[in-house]
Structures are given as C-alpha cells and as structure tokens.
Length: 223
Image (cartoon, rainbow, N blue to C red):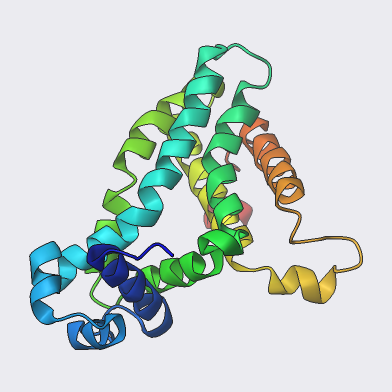
C-alpha cells in the first residue's frame, strides 16, 4: 500500500479541517494533531498558515483552470466564427467546476464546502488569495466572450459574465431545491445534462439584445 508523503498528508488534513470548521477556526495545532506531524514539518513545507491555505486552494483550482484553458484552446483553434463558438466558451468555463462538484471520488463535496468557507472568510484575506488564482482565466475568457458577442457593449458583456458566474455557482452549490421540488423531472446527479441546460440558458442570455433604457418623464411633466 502506497504511503502518503508528509506534505500531502498535511494538505489533505488541512483541506478537510478548513472545509469543516473554517479557515479562522482551524489552527495549526489542530492540523498538526489530526495529521500526526510536528510543527517543524508544517514550517518546513509551508512556512506559515497563509501559505498552507494558498496551497490547499491551489491544489484544487490549478487543475480545474488547466482543464478550462484546454477546452478554450480547442474552441479557439476551430475559430471564433464557428457557429457554436459561444456555446463552447461557456461550456469551457462552467463544465470543469460542475463536473468536479459532482465527483465524490475526487473530493467534490469537500471542494464545495471549501469554496463556501472561502466566501465566508471574515477578513477577506482568503477571498483575495482565491480570486487571485483566476487571473489567467479572466485574461483568456473575457476576450473570448468579446469575440463571441462583438455587438455587446462592454458593460453589458461584463454583467452577463457576472450573471453566468452566479448561475454556475448556484447550480454547483444548491442541489437541494432541485431534489425537493423537481425530483420527478430533474436529476441533479446528471452532471452532463445539467451542463447542457446551463449552457443553453446562459448562451440565450448572451445573445439577446439589451432593450433601450426607458425614457424618464419628470414629475412636473406628468402633472
């Protein structure tokens, strides 16, 4: 039976405790006790709790982002004029995290709890580290969305990207409502079906024209 090296053992233990208790509530002492290592080992491999947190997040997010970029590269290689380019860009962004969130063998449930703890971090430091890991994703995907939706105003494009991220996050985190209200027609464990529905829904949102802002009539004019 293969043994887990000390660094991996510390990371896996820290991830489980961070996901279960939160970042602030989990001390290095807790991690040391659970991982059955000494403080010197933590300092040797990580130097500080902040660096340990960074590497715990990086272990999950780095391969996730690599898969997103791989799928985006494939879409771009076929050309931005391809009729399904927008669909493929959206799928490249939302597919990998949704698949991971539904994959218990690769710690999907624990990953989702960890993400939840990241957003609940009181002082915001963990969120800064977390969002910083997506800089390359933003750098690559925003131009791809611009190429797919050249007629959208920059502000509209940004808002629709925000709505897409929100829909993805909600879909990843909340399967209870589906199971409670629509278990007879929807299967939240069907990850590929879920991805198709999300891609179809959000692509339609990107393609719709923004209606003009309503003309405001002054109070005096209405009298």
